[in-house]
Image: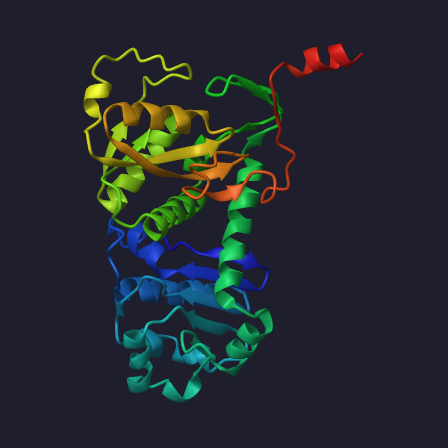
Length: 326
C-alpha cells in the first residue's frame, strides 16, 4: 500500500524515499532508486483522489525511472490536479529535458522543484516549500500523538514522578501509516545529526527497544538492549555490563523523554565500560534540561507545543497535592 499523507483538504504529500523502504520492501535507508512499480502506484493514487496539489518528494532519491515525468504528462497538462516534484537533484531534473512533457513544466527559483505554472505559483505562495513540508509533517505527527495520549494520572517509574496524562507511544504500531512516517523520520534524525558517528543503538525500555529494533534494521546498525536497567541503577542481569563494548559509541533511542532519567542512567552505565553515549533520538519530549547534552538530544515533537497539550509532572499524587492546598 502506497504511503501518502494529507497536508490539508487540497494537498497530499507523497515521500518517495519513505515508500522505497516500506512500499518497495527495500528495508535499507541507503536505497535511493524509485522503480516503475512505485511510480505507477503514485499515478493511481493521484488519479483516484480529489486533492488539488500533490507534493512528490524526491529527498534522498538519486535515481528513478526515466519515464517518471512522462507518466504524469496528462495530469501535468490538466488544471484540475497539480503535481509538484520537489527536492530534485540535478541528475533527475535532467530527465525532464528528454521527456515528452518537457514543455509542460517549469522550475521554481531554487531549481529543486518543478511543476506546471499552477504548481510553481502555489510554491511561491507558501514561501519556502521545504519548511512547509517539515512543519506539516510535525503537525501530522503531533495530532496523531495527541490522539493516543491517555488523559489519566500515571506514575512514571523511570523518573519516580506522577504525570497528569500518559503518552502511550506503543499505540503507533497499530497504525501502519503513522508508524511508517514516525520510524522514517526517526531514521532521518539519526542520519542527519549523527550520520555514521556511532557504532550501535541502545535502549532501556520496551517501547524504545521496539523502535530501535526497526531503526537498526533500516540503518543496518546493531542494537544493545539494556532491559534490566532500572530507575535506581538496579542491574539484575550480571551479563548486562559485559554486553557494553569498551570504546564503542552508542546512540540512545527512546519513545517519550520526560525528565531524561533513563538517558542519564544509561549514559552513566555506558561510561563505566569506557564507552560513550553520543546522544539520543526519540518520538516526543516533555522537557529535558541537561547542559552537557542539550544539543545532542533530538525529538520529532514537543508534547505540549506540537500536540497542544498541558502535560505536567509532580512528585505527589494530585489528590495529595490538592488535600495539602486545602
